[in-house]
Image (tube, rainbow, N blue to C red; front, side, top):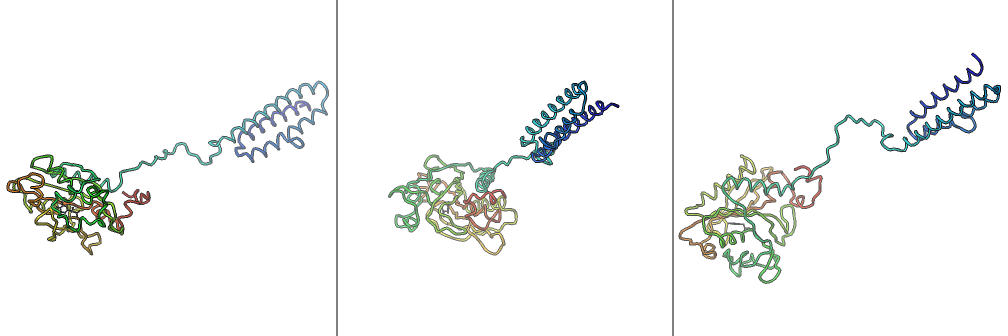
Length: 332
Ligand code: DAH
C-alpha cells in the first residue's frame, strides 16, 4: 500500500469516527469535547490530517486535498447538526419512554356540599318530593309573619339576623319557601327546598354565619306525625346508613304544633347532634296562606345540610367545607 493510499484510508477512518462521535455526543458539553477533538484549531484530528499534505508529492496532494476538504466539510456539517439537536429540549430528556401511557389530566368534581344536596334531592325524589326554590333575600312577611312568628319573638332580634331594611333580610331559614309554595298552589303539596340561609352566629366547628338547609313540606288530607317520623327515618337510613341512630325530642316552633327536634348520633357515637327541626304544620300557617286547617294537615321539617354531610363523611369541622383547600376537597 502506498503512502497516499494509507493517508486516504486514514481520512475515511477520521470521517467515520467523527460522524459517529458527533451524532452520539448528545449533551452540549460532551459535544464541545468532540468538537475540540476533531475540529480543534491546534491539535484537532482534522488539523493534524491537514499537516500530512505537506509530505506528499504534488499528484498525491491533489487527490488527498480533495478528499480532505470533503471530510472536513462533512465533519463541520455533522457538528452543526449535532449542535442544533442538542438545543432541542425533547432530544435531551433522558429516560423518556414514549411507550408509557400518558398522564391523565386532572378533572375537578362537585363540591361535597353539592354532592350532598344532589343526593338529598335523589332520596326525597324517590319519596315523591319535588324540588322548589325561594329567594335568599327575603321579606319579613315570608321569613317570620306568615310562619306565625309573633312580632316580639326573639328570633326576629336584629342581633340574630342580617336585616337589609326594616322589611327585607337575608333569609334566616328555608321555611319561608313553604309559604311561597302554599301561596301559589292548592294542596296536596310534597316539596323540598334546598339553599343557603344566613345568621350572624359566631363561627366554630359546627356553626357558620352562612349554611345550607333542606326544607320539606307535605300537605294532604290525613297526613300525620307518624308519616313525618317514617319519612325522616327512611331518609336518615338512606343517606347516613342503615345503622344510623336518630331520635326525636319534643320542642317548640311557632310554625308547627306539635314540634320536635331531630338528633343524630354523631360519628364516634359519643354524642347527639341536632340535625334539624320538624313538626305538624300549625293551623295559623295554613290560615296565612289560605288553606283550610279543617280539611288538610301537613308536616314540615328543616335540616342542616352541612351537618348531614359532616356526619356522613366523618368531617370534624364545618369550616373545612368553605375553605376550598383542594387537599381536603380531593377526598370526596
Ligand atoms: N326553620 C327551623 C330552623 O331553621 C327548622 C324547622 C323546624 C323547619 C321545624 C321546619 C319545621 O319546617 O317544621 O331552625
